[in-house]
Image (cartoon, rainbow, N blue to C red; front, side, top):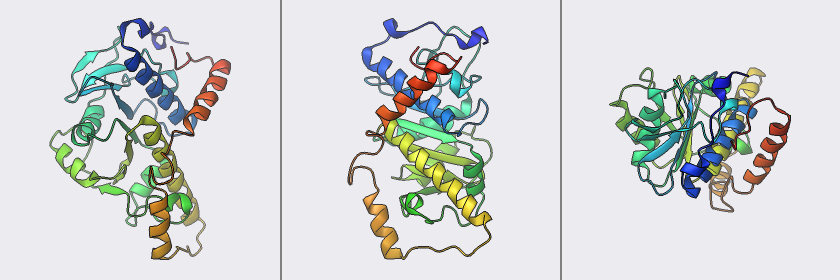
Length: 263
């Protein structure tokens, strides 16, 4: 393995709260990799640093998601200024704070933002119909998903206002001709929402490829189901699942040549 994927632990140099945030974020990167939602070294997941308003943790631009550890994450402000990063030539991707910084700045209820370029997500992002409520998983997003028109690579700071306007109060958004975005009050919730959104997109692509007539539930059923699946209605999404996800990573980490996420 390339030595550049090994980073000295910063546990002793950060607060316990920041270290826990680093553990959670590194775990989320590994889970996104595990569930096949990565795009080489691209895309980002951000998490607010507890007790440090306007400070975010983000991946270094150049690492695979399966390489990311708690100690390899960089700390930036909402304008993309690097406040700290490991002693490495890797920097950060500008799109990481153009998109993520905008959401974190505008949505005080959000601590984590996830953005992906998956095959299924990009496929649905190119469909005029958008995400269809074809099944229980997708119905969760009925009336609770936003859309943002493509404006080119996300490097223009002026796009921030329009992106935030389009996202509104929602925790999921399809970036037209681009990919998917989710956010949440916790990183656990943001991951759960992304997992469900990705699964919905994969299922839609499969169903539409079957070349048969598709059946949709009634509007009354759609509204009832979507309401029941909103975070906090029956339970906070992601909280129950997270310990199981960490056990999965621990099991895989013990068999993998990659450095464990908790380093």
